[in-house]
Image 1 (spheres, helix red, strand yellow):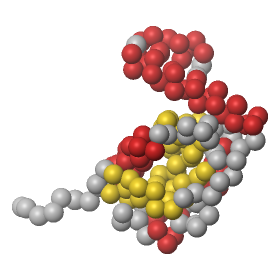
Image 2 (image 1 turned 135 degrees about the vertical axis):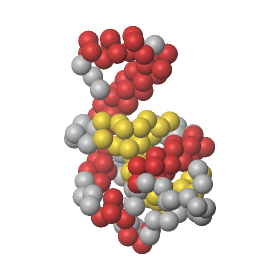
Image 3 (image 1 turned 180 degrees about the vertical axis):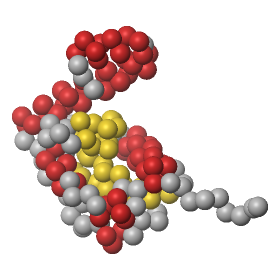
Length: 160
């Protein structure tokens, strides 16, 4: 049997959008960290540090149901200077609120379609978030170089 391949699953779609959004971050000079734990107990799909020291939160949506069943996304705004949704080019973007930036991914490439409104973080919150961001990024880089050593360190520190 031949024919078109089956459409990607929601996890595959989410991963493709997240990868494209991370590549966009690189093109924009932003440093992305995936699955960043936030002080409120949430986990940002991508939290990116901009060259100006600001934080961008990118919430990846794999489809309309993912968006419609998620009521926690407004809580990410308190831990970023700008909040974006990242979706693929099949997503019905009219579902998304105008008060959030929009990134659309297609064939592995993402572009900013709508800039996010700015809502600057308080300096104390920014410092705390920057330390957490740097700590997690450092641990993940160490894990790439020395997986066994990083596992020992995580166990000793009880992190991640």
